[in-house]
Amino acid sequence: MSSIDDAVARAQDMLDRTSPRYRTGPGRRARENDIAKRLTRVAVADAAIVAAVIVFGLLVMPIGMTGFLLVVLALIAVTVLLLATPAVAPPTLEKLHAVELKALPAQTGRWLDAQRPMLPAPAITLVDQIGLKLDALSPQLATLGEDAPAAAEIRKLVGEQLPAFVKGYEAVPAALRTVERNGKTPDQQLVDGLGVIGREIDDMAAQLAQGDLDALSTRGRYLEIKYQSG
Image 1 (cartoon, helix red, strand yellow):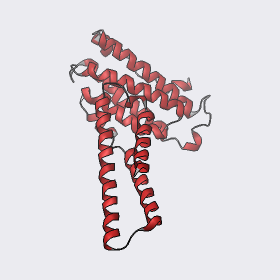
Image 2 (cartoon, helix red, strand yellow):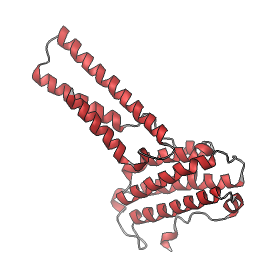
Image 3 (tube, one colour):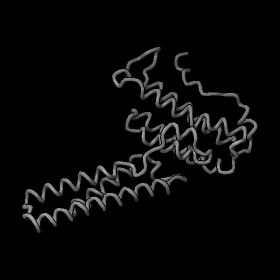
């Protein structure tokens, strides 16, 4: 069974290295709980397979060397699949629109994590950075009321504009994402737009830290997602 243990270790290492957010930030506990649930699923599934093989070997016929190798391959495949699949489904866009303000950064971060496989490498780096910014923003929103004027600006950026921008990119056919239009490719527009969003989150966090809620609520600045065409 050492090969199974090795597969578990490799898969968990892959999860730990997939994103810096799995190693740091206020949301670390939730992600560790998710990984723990994945490991529990793996243990239950692998135990069920082993038990079934033992029963088959005792009551029907020995599985032989070929059967043993097939069982090992099955255990490895199940282990990798379950470890790579989140224990809890990421939130939908509809849920992001309705989630409590104090939970919005964490939920948006989980949604972004689920989008990583569909994004180009430079954008993944920015998504990871945004995830860290959202982690840092979470405690700042813990005492901010839903009715506060600043709350609407934060909700608009984090819960609406950011997801809508990423979904807009994903709607572009893969074959066209590297085709230049109006001077930039969709891949480049995605990276530029994520950079704008990251800076906006930084500005919001700084204003919250300074207690400058009036400036945040009346800033009157909205993301210029289409600025690249100018």
